Length: 381
Image (cartoon, rainbow, N blue to C red; front, side, top):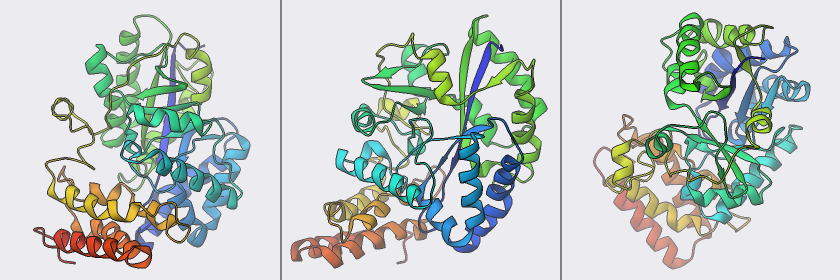
């Protein structure tokens, strides 16, 4: 058995407002080639998170891809994680909002004949973690999740490789930011990645058996980087599965079974894949979505905060879940993205909720918040 074990997690996601022609292009360049390849395979290939917000759109335009996903899950060639339906930053949600997002994701997948999860794992959008999510995830029946390792490594002088941190009842795998970025940047083919990975990781392990959690966006392979499915993902899976390979590719639930028994309660600091040390020191744990210094974040949250009070109202519940989509804040993060027209999908959704179900005072507050938002520089609503 290889002493270097790896979990590979791919994140399949599009926001609820994705333009149909863009979705079609992503399906042709990435999703359909990957899942057609899986249809020809008989062994486990990778772990995957596929959000309800994407599946709903696929079910309307690309039913064959939904069927391929279901087939891969049924045959065990993928390990499916559960997640939040509309990709919110979970630490910025209330416990009730977390619950609603999880339930909506599960119900949506079941409506398409897909299992909500095949492993008890939960995908945290943007790997955004705080202790506030541990209880709601465990209460929902999740046994493990995946966060980013950078802030943990800074506080603990390195990330674990032979145990899995525990926060309450929840195991928290730590995704390698450095190796995840090496995958996502698209500069390496498999030969180079394999050579670098195989040389560096055993030095980290110091001769012991351990694991690395690799995770990146599925769109990396074919959409963000043309040809990267053939140059990197496909040979990685096919060569690492061979008998005698120095790397063993495993589902995360098997990694937990192997490395979980020696785990203990550990502090996992708040942060995401994008949180840097200077952000953490400043208390800016989620800088791309809730930065105190970002005037667009502040204005959008002021508007959405009025709408989200109606999350328990059946007449508004689905729209509130959509209004919390992380993409709207990311689009005006300035690190490096600044695309206000895409932020406005969330702003208009929030105002629509307020106008439809809000009280007179809420409609007044919502209109004022919306007017203040569109007066900000660079926004032409």
